[in-house]
Image (cartoon, rainbow, N blue to C red; front, side, top):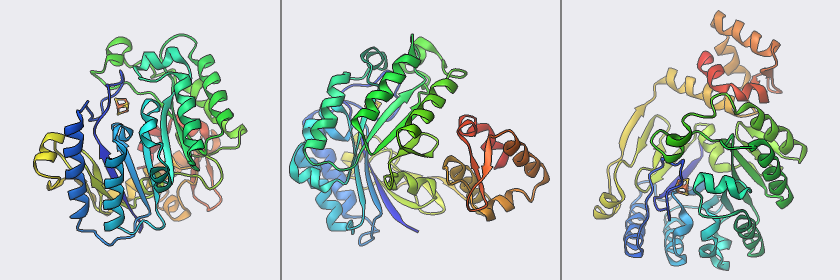
Length: 364
Ligand code: SF4
């Protein structure tokens, strides 16, 4: 069992039009007080001394942190945990990349994940992003020039608006030409209550198939391994942190609204940033789910079918103890939505990934 840590930075310069994550705009004093609280939570971790496989700074927009705050948090993590073999990632947005362009800081992260979303300026303004396409490219080159060796680009697909397929094709060509180590391509799901939802409703219910298949084909042709429904990696560049989520490993949660998993309980640091600061980062996590053996197995099925590796043979055999599920698996294979993989387990195909929610719910 490997251990990881998720660090939630709940600040953004402005809310994107599709986003329902917990984040808000903060002034420097608040950011400073928040970082002190976070440092305190890290330094008082009951898991001090553990060796971590990965650390992920997510948000929000971690790159709104000034250099000195980033360094304080990395120092705290290094003092408390063994990070000698850890993948250490920060998310960043193109418009705040300059906060990261310091040789010491660049050297202490092993991976950078840029929230590009699209290389089309019309689509970027439709999403309410603060950057344009050329700023996204500049951010990528600035990171590479500063020594970043492992970079992910986040994209969004199945956007509303005219000519999305053509724009997506251009976005993919630009992304491929930059040669990032990893590309994530998420189908945009507008969250209820967001400006995008109010304007377009649930627009992509039937329109995600063509963009998704285009992404799968183009990225595979460009040499990326399609290793998870929405994730594509160059050789040996799978995201270690996300693999920890998808293989039911344990992860610690730091920061307000961060989630953690101890192998049985899924929990959340359930508080606002204001409460988090006033309690100096010491909040009792709320257990949101306690998983028994059957639930752990169902979750294992669900998570492993997200991956191209799929389930192992033993898990498939257990699924097929139920005759109805056995027949369903046979149908999936004969209709090319799934295949028997190299380990004798079950993996979904690209077309299977597209309807993975309904397939997985039948098999859990
Ligand atoms: S930058 Fe990310 S977290 Fe912040 S508002 Fe935009 S999508 Fe949400």
